[in-house]
Amino acid sequence: MSYSFFDHTADVGIEACGKTLPDLFSDVAEALSFIMSAPVNKKPDGTLFFEIESEGVENLLLDFVSEIIFLTDSKCILPRGFKSLKIIKTEKDRYSLKSQMNFNVIIPGTELGNNIKGATYNGLSVEKKNGRYYGRIVLDV
Image 1 (cartoon, rainbow, N blue to C red):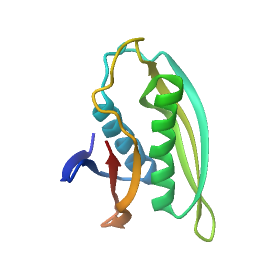
Image 2: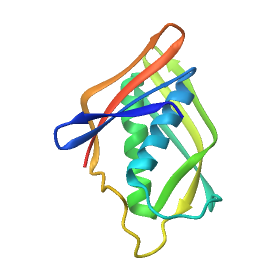
Image 3: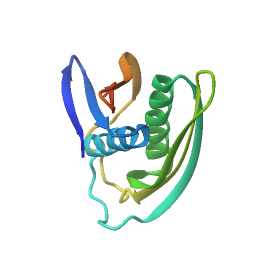
């Protein structure tokens, strides 16, 4: 686990770092799951495959977080780690993400800790420094 939260007016900010881009994205997803926290089984209930392609690594992070929020809202599931998470630079500034996300089903009638409306471009960043990847994203709650 390599993430923290920062204060942001009416929103929640996540800062994360990882040795690789997949590590960074995985840590952001873990923080996202913590924010939404709900009582779930300890063992994952299943695995879901999804794929995203975006222009720029920052947009990929935003689209990744948005996809997790969408899946949580539409399928009533919470991310619980990844069997695999691969990020490939496909062309000039395009990135492809393929993921097998472990999830837990949210118990019917359970409310999430925080209802996340979406991810924002405000303060969005991903950069590589000293051999590690650092990212920031702000969530509208």
